[in-house]
Length: 202
Ligand code: GRF
Image 1 (tube, rainbow, N blue to C red):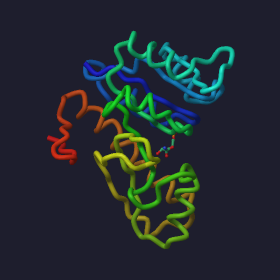
Image 2: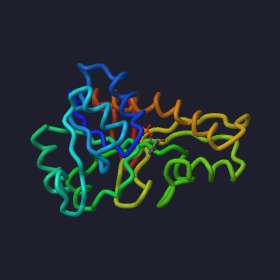
Image 3: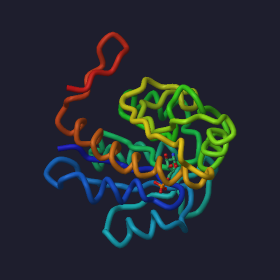
């Protein structure tokens, strides 16, 4: 059984899509972690009685730091961390601690349209400006460089008829809600293998 921690900073639609689409006997969201205590994603987690943790690299009342968070997640026997719209860079030692156990969803086809500053509407605005006729979503392992870790899964979407960056965002979000539960399910079935630095999904 997969025990998930989902890291969020805002709307939480990907959190909801995992919650609603992955069967309970395959994966359970046991923690939601956020740098923002007041956001719709945290509201959702509280409604569903999921443990929530607020994270800060600085000492702050009501927040844990990354060492404390690693301990809490170990106590909860978390074996996969999903970054779903989490806007803070994860410190290197936390990434080392959870090597190959942290995945991220990015709202474009990496390695294009990624890197520092490429989040939210910045991504879709850049895709719009580029004149690309396709976009999509990418799920990848998290390493120490923004949007750089090994790609696990991608799906593209035709955006040739999109009339604005917002329309691109809506099309991509639909794809995100399909592929994130799919990949989580594959992890729960142990069907994601790392072979010679490539990811194979069985
Ligand atoms: C998604 O587009 C995701 O790809 C990106 O941030 C957005 C989060 O949306 N990393 P939501 O909070 O899951 O609704």
